[in-house]
Length: 445
Image (cartoon, rainbow, N blue to C red; front, side, top):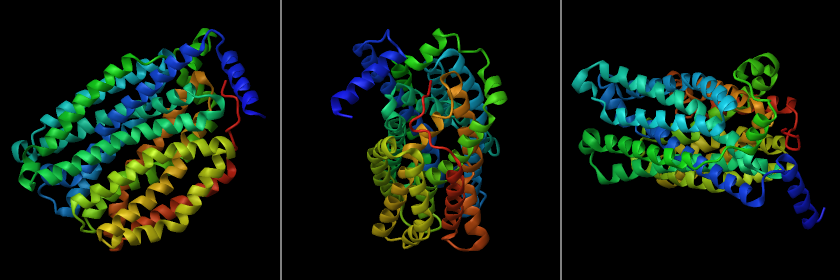
């Protein structure tokens, strides 16, 4: 097919999908979708900031514990937030499939902003004792509920806005935008450690970063007001396919698709949170690198991820989702132990190199992943089906990742123990990928 024929085919497909939309309207909707995904980036700043501040928060909210025990307690609170993500997925997924993507994403951003303000105002254990970690846990649960709808909705939003032959790229752009929020959190924590001493960080530094997150959440809300509804959802609503309780349809008729989303997302939870949240803290305790080096490494790695993950999604638009994801899992199986050996070296060059290699493995898998799970559902139930399978997997595997990895080190006495967890997960996902069907050319309508 020539370039001209391909462009004509895409134009015909676009017109067939919604003949009422002209070129200007499609451009407006795509700009709106990008604004929505930027809002997701800002919200992910709020959610991931907690784990980058874990060594600081451990001493402020769990001071009676030892260093490793304090981290375990802090990661336990992190896991509690993840346990709320499936509930958020049910609520926001159902709401997004019945009332629209825009409304669901707007409410999730508002909820996250309120939680951030309250976290910045929290008294520490020294002021109110046990009530401090209890309040911290409750606010993390509110954040988890919010993200349960936010991340799923943004993937669906970008997926539905993309051309049929660019769905992998479109969904991967959502992952790229979300990583900018992670990058901002890592960058500001790096600046905080460089500009403030330990006492200043404990007194007010960490609070400033949470307040900044609340302000960023307000920006997200403003952006969401300019976001247009996706044409796929608008067409489904016009055709009478939207139901008041879409979760019933998902549970009755699409259980197998939800199970596939769960399986594919479980590996996402492990590799993503291993690279973005656990490794920066792992490098500080037990490895012993400075906070500046650890956060500098994740800052560079996140920059690479933001730039390159769309390329992985774009590649899957041509060779298929399974091919790229299988290659990523196979490489992770082979390289996990050498990467953690590099991290264990504790020198600045080795730890940064290890983080960069790990992030390449992650972005190869995540590039096609969002499109792969979105292609398993029709428009009327896509938000709900994706959200439930994805967030349930995150709660079980993503939220517990720092806790499990830290426990493995404590039980085995081996600082490289997390590598074996990563290898086992890679082996299992290769088995799963061998059994799932290819979807990159399917008709999502």
